[in-house]
Image (cartoon, rainbow, N blue to C red; front, top):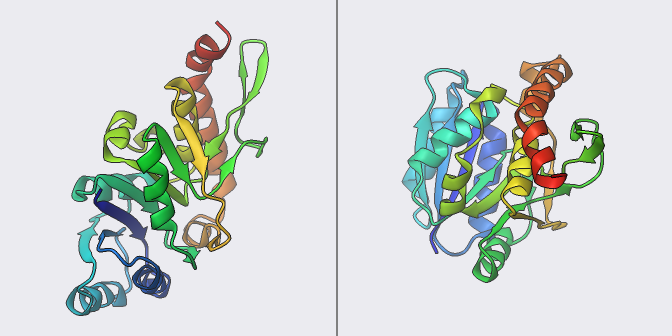
Length: 234
């Protein structure tokens, strides 16, 4: 099955460059890498991509440029639209790679394609993923958004990241709720060779991120409380 790896970025070309170098080292079979420039202002972002497209032949590198900053969900959705792989991997550019994680993803999907794979799944109360379903206080397990992978067919079923959440936060909890509602399993990789450096770009752009998160959690609750109550406590 063909692979597409979608990586959005905003400035900080050094991080994206490092991810590309790691992918070159740890991904031996040719893949499609879709780089989504989320309206960066630093000139080395464009020149850096041009260097990789010219000098690296093993992987196909596609380039998408957003005319305005779309944030996490919007940039991943644009990257998916530009991709062609049978398997899609949504990867943040602040994830250090020191293992052959793509091979592991392929092996999992070869045995079961009714799954959403992630770097790490949260199955405890993270402070944002607990909602009331009728009289029941329920924790919604979810795949952390820094690495999510599945088949193209599955992602089409999901419909992409919901634009209702704006530029960031709660999109991954939304995917967790969708998985519960549609009886799809969430499978974490839990590989020590994947290390998330945690929200480097978002905190720079939005120092009051937590306020934004609270708004999106309320959107999430409004969207899913009734549906999940009917599903889990009918």
